[in-house]
Amino acid sequence: MAQFDLSNRGTFGSKFGIIAAAAGSAIGLGNIWRFPYITGQNGGAAFLIVYLFFVFAIGIPVMLSEFVIGRATQRNPFGAFRKLAPGKPWWLVGVLGIGAAFMILAFYGAVGGWTIEYLIQSIGNTFKGKDAAELQIMFNSFLSDPVRPVIWQLLFMAITALIVLSGVEKGIERFAKVLMPVLLVIIIILDIRSVTLPGAREGLEFLFKPDFSKINASVIFEALGQAFFSLSIGMGTLITYGSYIHKKDNLANTAVIVSLADTFIAILAGIAIFPAVFAFNIAPAVEEGLVFVTLPTIFQQLPGGYFFMLLFFVLLIIAALTSSISVLEVVVAFSVEELKIPRKKATLLATAAISVLGVMCALSWGGLSEFKILGTHFFGLLNSTSTKIFLPLGGLLIVLFVGWGYGKSKVKNELSNQGDLRSRLFKLFMFLVRFIAPIAIALVFLNGLGILKF
Ligand code: PFF
Image (cartoon, rainbow, N blue to C red):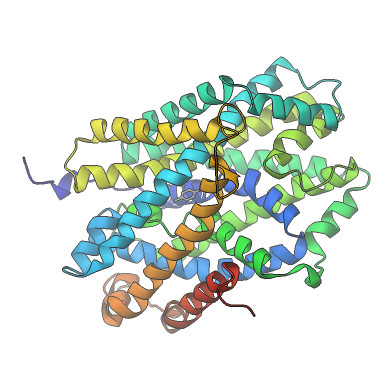
């Protein structure tokens, strides 16, 4: 079989394209569906502060490390580590990443399917006249339906595969460039709607006025997992995207802009949701249903609610797709480059394999609700294990590699585009990847798993 030809690899066409694609990966259901309910469950503002600390002290250094590894090698995560550290077991990070990609896309695709269902319900205006309790019942009965969650999950996966099939620049980049700015505009409209509700203040206080007594090992563990999940780091997604970044682009700027944009959108999502939740007296801890139960309650009581509801679910689907394509791309790039499977076949095979797990997630409240592992259903298991364990573990190994394994001068060369850029914050970056990030991840881990108690 012909050797894989590097000149055939895709690249991102423009600087804005890279930022849009990477931000598209980062900004997704993690910001809009997961961030609000995890924040709600973990005490609001105190959680937000821990989360922000992790984004800056750990998230940005891990993201930049991934870009360095990806662009230096122009390979998928597995191939990248084999190229940079031949004969050493660092390629295992790539294997871990593929595992995480399978787990994440399985439950992500299921939630992607929910957004399709809810868009269709919004079009049909079926929420009309129902209160929060009735909408909770409606959500639960949808989740336990034996067919609909599966059909929509498969449709969501099929759309993801179609975009990935059209290749890096023509598919992913073009898609992200157009849709990410639309997303920002829609969410700002939603925010204005929400903060002008009577009683919005309590929601804003919940989100921004910290009660530090609420911080414990589990809150910290959740915040770390959420930071990794939201930034798309720890499994090689951004190694893969980094491998498509042009040699002349500024990696550090890109990592900072993408992380800020991701954090900004999560906070905007919180501002859209919490004031509204409090204004209508809905408990913020309704778990995975927060967005799907409370927002229809709120929107249908607002002037123009029908229109805002539609916009919201369109937004959620767009955000979900620009993320799901990046997860699938990890598996596809690996299959093409390492297993030498043609891109089209690789995409179809990966999508089919992930969809099998995805169906099990989609059925976690339906046909498979009795199927429990460690006391939790399949969806919950993949959701929490991948984010809290796989991603931080991958991130830990990635920063250890860049901090200690790769070689300081090589890292500096890549970050400065072989000396073309001034790298003012290089020392700070090295300090973070060598000491702060690995020690912090390790401590949160041991503490969160109950192995060490602080
Ligand atoms: N960051 C995405 C979100 O917040 O929705 C989810 C995600 C994408 C996680 C890609 C991990 C990943 F590699």
